[in-house]
Length: 286
Image (cartoon, rainbow, N blue to C red; front, side):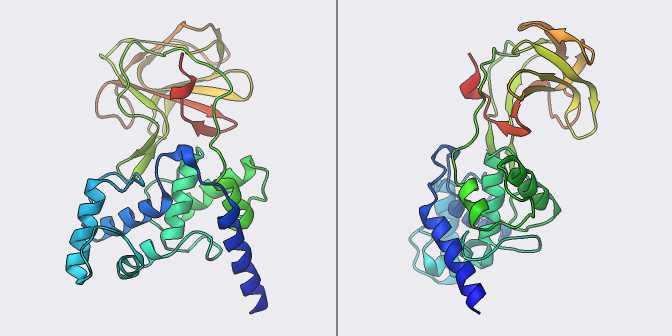
């Protein structure tokens, strides 16, 4: 009992002293409420952690159904009625494989923002969440045991990684989908809708370390390695025009826009990864 009490106290301290991830754009506890509402068929918007009109309306619908005060605010009684997906707060217990709850949503949310998404935000600590947590722990120099305790919580709430390098635009097209939540998942790059066959350019000089078909949904993919452990990815291409090992300069054509892999139309999916973690490319574009 003493060990359990000490563990709970350490977790609480970690939550209290850890800074909020201000650049993540939303709150994990709001995301947990959205997931709980979605599980009940009451919320169909993006799991974005933002208490906007759609979230407030879904909360009111649930409150009417549960015969609670209808104010659109997810207070303690509303969270309690919503169940463990909304009720569990990160830091009240150790989180690991097999757990279900709002604290698991928070872990999925924060690891995604740190560049290690685990698929759907669903509040279940399954195999994909376990892998994401271990990858994050390795990157932060923590023991990769897949257990989210005080040290991992502090690291998850730290400032998000950024690219140390600057990049040019990889295609002449506007940006639509950005880095962040999209539906019930997380989008790890920028999407540039462009006409089929449009030229795709190297955003910075580098060496080609990947060129060809990717079975993970990226379709035809080019990966460039730059300095400072940074890579850029160019996905869903219709054609690859470089080879592995080739050195390319900034602005060199490396492929053409397509819709291969998991794509609904022609566009370029562009990612920046630093030490294996996906980072928001937008601040690095010049």
